[in-house]
Length: 422
Image 1 (cartoon, rainbow, N blue to C red):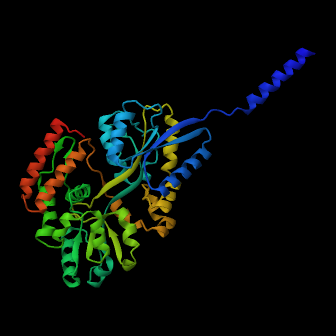
Image 2: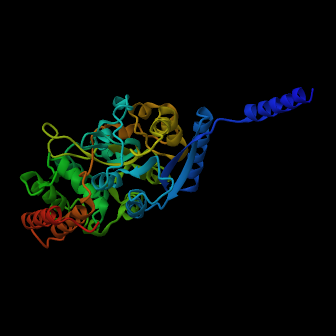
Image 3: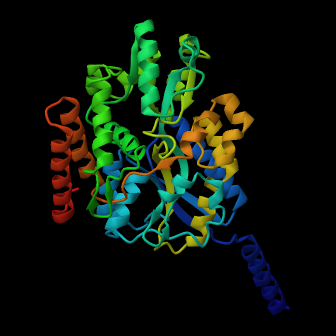
């Protein structure tokens, strides 16, 4: 009898603890750069939603500094030297940070096998994530250079469409500015990454190339014409003021929204500051940047992108892909577009009435179809700084276009030969 009683107690304990035990969750680490409070709240909500749909997965959020340079140092010194107990399974990176890291370390999974709906994304945004053998990241949100213009002033002076070429830009700007007493074309001419990106849009719009691998191609007919055009807008055609050379992004936007300019080269993320200005209500249009000849050449928009990549050394690669697939889904991108004004990387969402009712993005579509990426090289930051000096020397008329591009070419070749400290 005692044996039967003891057996019953043991059976009860086994049943109690055995049935009450939940299967252990798989934890994956998601690393991202520090963002605004509202962006963090949205991210937390999305993670909870993902975990609700995937109860066997727990997502650990790892916040890094917002500055890409500090992120780069963190990844090189900690993650890629394997100093962390729980390295990230999924990385949220700026596209240019990804290009620097890809050349330094072999840590990113090629995800072509998982990624089956590439056609749903902007082609240039996908191309920006291709390195060596395949796609190693997916664009989560996008940003690009566009031409903002005063559509009320174009209509008033008889122009039915915005300029497609620089010749048309010069004509429209001169015609309108002489009668309205304002600047023709404002852009960021101060030394900095915005200046490099603006030059690249001029160069690409002339079928030019900065570098191809380690081959430096900027000192070409197309490169010389592109840089000379930037200078001529200020020093010959006078549609851009001398003050452009010292303008940063904010001062160029301020000049435009104060009604002092007809055209502005700006990023798509500037739209809120521009469209929310009451004095410009229903007066602003958006178009692709001009090119040199619209019958032979195409406009270009310099791509900025937030991308998601997977750690190839993760032991939970399938779970990591599940998170990436969820976060880059149409549902999540729509939610981020409405709640935090993130431009989707999925093309169809640019027709979505809910998104456009919140903050119009449909006008960005033609420009975004012409996305091009800055050179995919770990040396890009130093190349960019060389080009900024090259451009400024020409804008300030310290050197001729030929002289400045020859010097820049030699300096860039030296970077490729000797490397840099970045």
